[in-house]
Length: 172
Ligand code: ZN
Image (cartoon, rainbow, N blue to C red; front, side):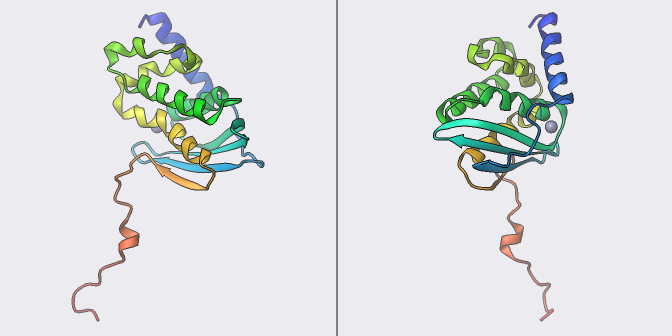
């Protein structure tokens, strides 16, 4: 990547993290999901309003690092007017980009990514991949139309509550 391009990408990300677009609740939302990335502490709630199969409006709220905020902001811009299938396809493209082998990231900058190409540098920082993908995972749940919670740590041991507490021996 040329240093000019890298600078441009950084500016785009900085701009969106400082002035996130579509940062609001959506009263007419048909779907909503909360996402959490425990690695970084990012939280995002994504709201989506579907009209038939098309994304009429999409927005988000939350608090996260600059990468997750910029990713959510640019995601909402990219998705308006898209069908669910197109949204899914875009996520696949985006995910392929941010998980690229750094030496081959340029090959994964598909034209339909548009401004999202700004995240091509993320693949050099594996710990940041989940920051960038959190809003998208959350969107996917919101598109399913039920209020859901998403964690980027699917295997996380947050099941403790369901198992109940074990009493200390001889305390009965
Ligand atoms: Zn983050």
